[in-house]
Image 1 (cartoon, rainbow, N blue to C red):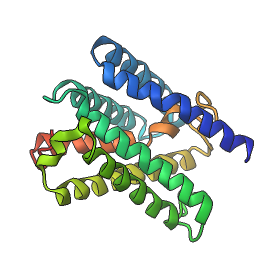
Image 2: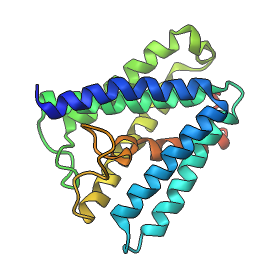
Image 3: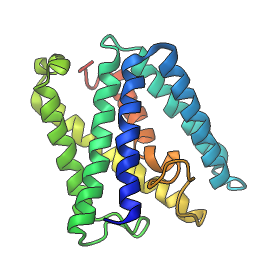
Length: 218
């Protein structure tokens, strides 16, 4: 096992429980955690895109993205369930994409991000839908039993797709800036934006879908 992979695994073991902790706790703790992440993400974006014409557009997008995360956690009847559900989809998509991409490799998905493969794409979908199957059968997500499974899985595929597209979009901006990572704050992953690149697109998408009542799970 390479040192880089070891760092990535250890970082994930530490980070994922921390994120889940703040989502579950909510209140001031979650809001403070979200605010810190926002400032780090904006700083990384600023360092990556300064002097570029899309600099301000990116900052505006990050404001809306983090605002949508705040609303998903604080403005839905089922408190943490909504944001936790979405986070699990995004995290499992990322894990599945990484594992399948490393193990099976195969044809590249796009030149924008050379590490992205079709096997990784399939792995992302497989892991996210598998995770949702477990969630549906979990007592903590009992409310999902009241909804059509097809709708839930269709929504999961949509969120997983947006998450993977977000990964590619941030890779494009890194390529334009001629950098490998957006930062060095997370060992094995790089910057915070490297870690949440899919989420910052998947969360606002989900917030809009819920706000328009296109999906009424929560």
